[in-house]
Amino acid sequence: MTDALHSALAEVGAHFQVEGEFKEARPYGNGHINDTYLALYDSPYGMRRYVHQRINTHVFREPEKVMENIRRVTEHIRHLVIADGGDPAREVLTLIPAHDGSFTCRDAFGQVWRTYAYIDRTQTFDVPPDLHTVYQAAYAFGHFQRQLASLPGPSLHETIPGFHHTPSRFEAFVRAVEADPLNRAARVKGEIAFLLRREADAPVIVDLLEQGRLPERATHNDTKINNVLFDELTGQGICVIDLDTVMPGSALYDFGDMVRAAASRSAEDEPDASRAGFDLALFTQLARGYVHATRDFLTSAEFELLAFSARLITYEQALRFLTDYLNGDVYYKVAHPSQNLDRARTQIAMLAEMEDQAGLMEAIVERCRNEKE
Ligand code: ADP
Ligand code: GN1
Ligand code: MG
Image (tube, rainbow, N blue to C red):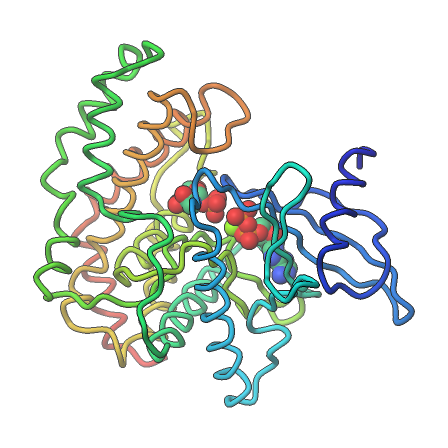
C-alpha cells in the first residue's frame, strides 16, 4: 500500500464507528464503477475487517438516495433473517455508521465513502468454479428477490434513472454511433450492424411493465455472480451484496443479467471473441436455482419471459459496452483501450449462441418449473 493510500484510507476510517486502530488497506474486488478497499483494524479483541467504498458520484448522482435504499433494504432483510433463525451478521450486509450518525463521509477531495462490516470466511467468484456454485448463486438472487417482495412502501428511489430501460440504451447507442467522437465506429461496423438489427427486442419488457402485464418489484439490477458471498466452508450462497442499484424494476432483468454473467464460457472481457460464448449446462443450473427460490411468487408472465430476458440483457450490455467504447471509455473503468470493445464482443458472441439455443432455453425453464427441488 502506498503512503498516500494508507493515509487516505486511515482518514476515511476515522469518520466511521469502526473497532480498533487502522493498520492497512488494499484495493479489493473487480467492480467497474466504485472503488472498494478491504481494511484491517487492530482491536483489543483481535483483528477487525471492514470494507470502505468510494461511491462513484458520476454514476450515482444522488448518493444519499443510494444510501437510503441500502439502509431500508438491509434493515428489512435483517429482520427477516432474524425471524427465520438465521445469522444477521452473515446473511445481510451491515452498514457501519459514521460518527455523525449518517452512513457516509466525505474525504478531503469531497469524495463520498461508506463502510460495511467485512463478512469473514466468505469468498466471491468472477467466473464460477463449478455447477453447484452457479446453482447457489441463482438461489441466492432468487431468495433475495423473495425477501424484497415484502419490503414495506414507499417505492425505493430510482438511483440511476432508466437503468434497465433498454430502448433508452438503444438510443444512447445510436447517438454514440452518430457522434463517433474518437472515430472508432469504422473499426466496429459488423458489431454495430448486429446490434442495430435487434432494435425490435429492446422495448419488450419495459412495454409490458408499463402496460401492467409484468409486475414492478424491488430488484437488485446488478446480479453478477461476484455480487454473492459464498460461505467458505459450505459453499452456500449466503449474502447478496453490491446494493447500489437496488431499485424498482423487473425480476426479469435480474434473472437475465445473472445468466449473462454466470453462463458465460469466458471472462466478460476475454480479448479472443472466439473463446466467448454461452454455456447451456451453466444456464440449466441458474434456471434451477432461481426457479426453485421464486416459483411460488413469480407470475406466469414472468416465467414465460425468463429465457428471453437472458437474451435481452445480454443485448443491453452489448449496447452499453459498445456505446462506452465509441464514446471513449467514459463510464466503465478500463485497463486498456479495447477493453470495452472486448466486453461488447463477448456479449455479442453469447447473444448469438443464445438465439440459436432459444428453444432449448425455454424448455429448460419449463422443466425447472415442474421439477421437485
Ligand atoms: P463493486 O461495485 O466494486 O463491484 P462490491 O460491493 O461488489 O463493489 O464489492 C467488491 C468486492 O468486495 C465483492 O465482489 C466482494 O468480493 C468484496 N466484498 C464487498 N463487500 C464485502 C463484505 N461486506 N464482506 C466480504 N466481502 C465483501
Ligand atoms: C457494472 O460495478 P459493477 O462492476 O458491479 C455496472 C453493471 C454492469 C456491469 C458489467 C452501476 O457493475 O450495470 O452490468 O458493470 N454497474 C453500473 O460488468 O452501471
Ligand atoms: Mg460488485
